[in-house]
Image 1: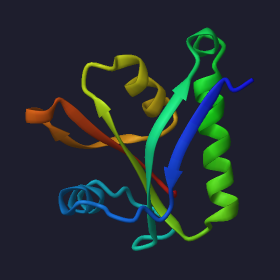
Image 2 (image 1 turned 90 degrees about the vertical axis):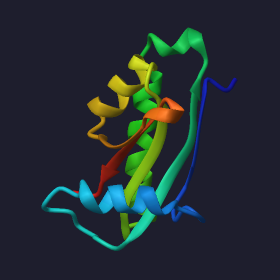
Image 3 (image 1 turned 135 degrees about the vertical axis):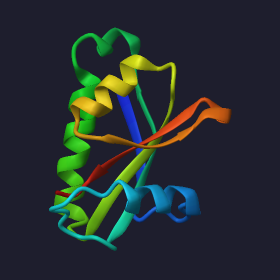
Length: 116
C-alpha cells in the first residue's frame, strides 16, 4: 500500500532566474553550502486518510534526512505552493521553509528550505 509520494530533484535541472534571485535575496546567515545544489520538490501527495496522522510531515522530514545523507553539497530546496493552501504552507513553515517569492498574478508562493 502506498500512502504518500514525494517527488524531488537535487540538483533541479532548471531553476528560473526569479527563483535564483529570491533564493539569494532571502538567504539566512549560517548556510552551509551557498552556491551548492538547488533542489526542487515537484509534489508531495499523501492519501487523505493518512494526512491527519502526520504522514505528510513524516514523509517530508525523512526526505530531508535522506538529502543530507545522499547530497551533502545541497544548498536549498524550494517548492511552489498555492497561496490559498494554508495547510500545506503551515506544513512547510513548520519544517523550516521560508517564503522567498510571491507571484501574485499566479496565486503561487515559493518556499525554500536552506541547508543551515
